[in-house]
Picture 1: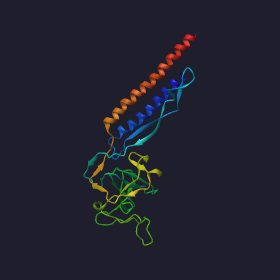
Picture 2 (picture 1 turned 45 degrees about the vertical axis):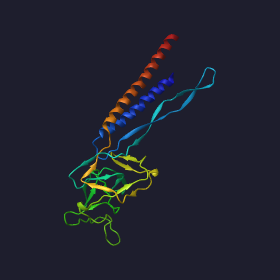
Picture 3 (picture 1 turned 120 degrees about the vertical axis):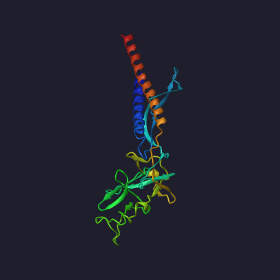
Picture 4 (picture 1 turned 60 degrees about the horizontal axis):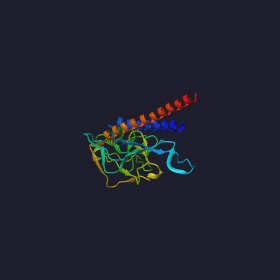
Length: 260
């Protein structure tokens, strides 16, 4: 009988975790480049029950389920048109690479609504959270100011005195690089739309013939109708789990009263 309490409690906790994921998806339905998440469940230990004669039957008894992991859907989101020269979208597979200007660490995203960020006396094409966009030369894209190149006197240079940040280009010439991975499943989500590859994803590969469109950016891939369906499913399952606990409690009270 105590197992019924345990199963009900675990079922309710698992559905609460699912609701948290669904709520986060709904909250990011308008977030550029956001990828919808799905909660995955796993069964806990199960065993075959024994019959009256002590032999094993086909009836199963177990400890319920648990929220195991969250998977990410990398389906393309809607393409939104804009009038900004710093907005880009990718046709087909691929990610933009972003580099942290302080640590040099790179993350990957399909969110291409970029801005201009100032560092010293230079301007860079950057994401809204301040990471620099990597160009086809595998360096952060540095932008000219008007007709003059803007040089950062504090920027590190090579032995010939050339800035390591790459040559400055005009906004019209800026071309973000596109990278892809052998596998995208299991990439770590950092923030709303940035991802870090893990070992099984392999090394990033530059997509030479990538189709990048200026003046548009990829929106969220959340399907709001599917998310509300998941809300109803989770609510029903949560109610049934609590009803299991309530019914078990009523039976326990009835048995205790009979004994007294």
